[in-house]
Image 1 (cartoon, rainbow, N blue to C red):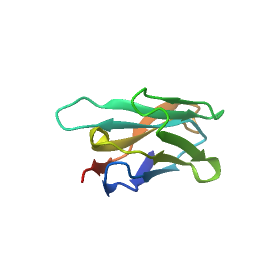
Image 2: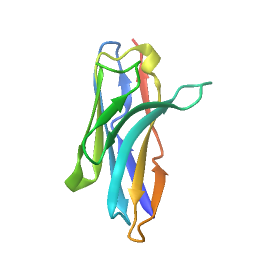
Image 3: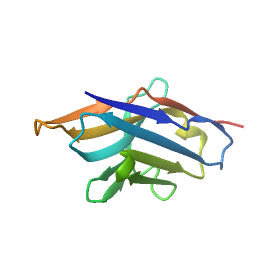
Image 4: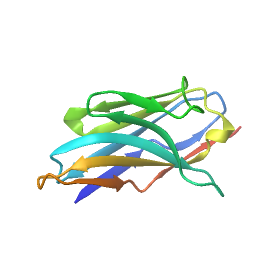
Length: 120
């Protein structure tokens, strides 16, 4: 099993910044990719950003240029630096990890979510 623990959410004013963290632990041979998704009230969960084992990244168009995803491989931790935040960024942010275990099987795992609220 793999556990993902997120932190860093909170209340921030428009134009402000926040950094989210997500640490993975458990039966991990390799993390293929880690990413962030978000879900606003009344909306479906949507992709935000991903970083793969080789370091390549992708972003949703709505956050490109404002958010930066990075990872610390030694700590199995992914970060999401969010800048120039807008009220429409308000959502519960979820971490997702694509993990290969010691049986050489790949599984997706989700964190519990962390609330980000952008409001004056």
